[in-house]
Length: 459
Image (tube, rainbow, N blue to C red; front, top):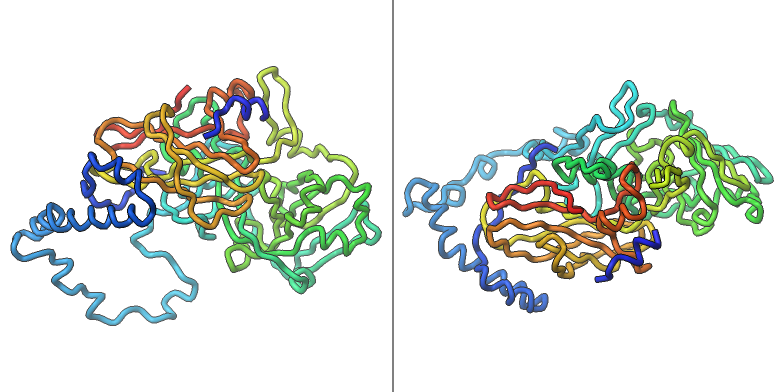
């Protein structure tokens, strides 16, 4: 991707429900003031804007909705049932459930990718998530032969190949060892794949929803290899094999394993893995496309060359403009997307909005995210919210005052290596337009004058 890097100038479901933001509490003429103030001044400015709105039109509208401008807002003046009655007992939900009012926040399926007898893909609702952590129940799914709920007492993990003593571990064996916990993103190599062909799928859930970020707990794979007496001089690659019906197998270079980044993991966000995410054991390979994070992990073999298995020779390879296939392109390059405002959402009125989204890089930390509201002609640098971690999602925010006219919002990320997320023109100059995998081009959303947001693709 060096050609793309050289050309880039240094410098996101069904129609989603958008909670009603405070309307018109910021005068458009004050945009320059909010941009020029520091964090403390910015907070004071916004507080003042809210106070003015509440003292004026907002209070008037609330009173009018009450039916009598002099009676005030009944949602404030009349105590609701939940303030005067006994709530449900703890035992009502032994395992916690989301509110019934959040029922629209769910994974959604797509018929667009490889199918078996079962649906094979569900997309995470990233337009409805906050921060950087994906709840386990909303983590995206990609299956190659359906998912299984495997008995952990019967599951075994084996290490063989260029080792002195092949080892077989039970789950109890593994969980007795010293463990580590780390936050990392996982992205399917086909995420944003439909966009290669100018297919304007409607929402960010479908354009970028094969993406999640969790805290994973497990033991470094290098520890287990050393326990088996691995030949770390001649061993150049590992083959990871899953226990599902597809026997998913992937080649992973040892330089990733030696760094202790690669984990044999059983924990996700503080609990055991979910069955659809590989319970009871999966591989975690930070920065690498999700297919290499082999689920239902049953075996790792150490060898001296890549295996070129069926899943590496047919799928997850990049079709180049000259007709050749590029193999073993596993790293997920620097990428970002605006999640609000995004396709399917509606801006209720002109005024102040917070533009927010996610950025990530398979090569390390996100260093910077720029945002444009005019289709890439002008850019402003967004705020990166803590924590900013290596090979992990990073949340960004930026203030925007929408003037009620058409706008095209975009984000462009840069990672700590200096790589800058390319435009579609830059990406296609190197990769052509017939690929499926590893699309990290800048995403564009059109905000129309009526407030509706749509997916558009700029050349």
